[in-house]
Length: 162
Image (tube, rainbow, N blue to C red; front, side, top):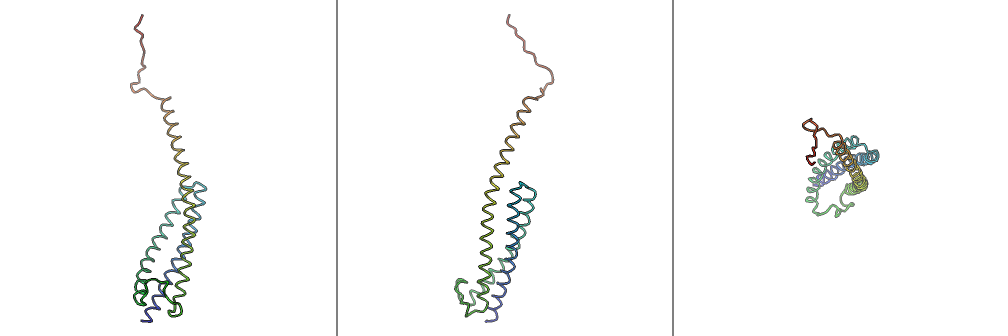
């Protein structure tokens, strides 16, 4: 049973290390998104979002496996929360807690950058909306002044009063 616990700690720490790498990549992509928004480069922004989604999908898979290991570990050692684990009693608990803290730190950093990007994206979207409205108004004006008559024949107004 002791070996199983060590295996759970080792596997969970390994999963967190992989997640940390993916989160670091996501943080870099998020910072690149900020630049793309500032440059108003929608194509680049779309590509960055797609790359980020790939990382998110990989992280989701890691999280599923981590949750399974965590559930089994909690049952094996008889705790409800990982924070209840005594690092002196369980080898690997300290490393797991440190890895968890590092991952949470990265998540907070990404979250902060995402909030900034969200605000900037809203501004960009509003600006693009204003441009589209101006183009539509210009198009209506242009159509009104350059309107072709449907029949093609000139119309005449006749004054029948004398």
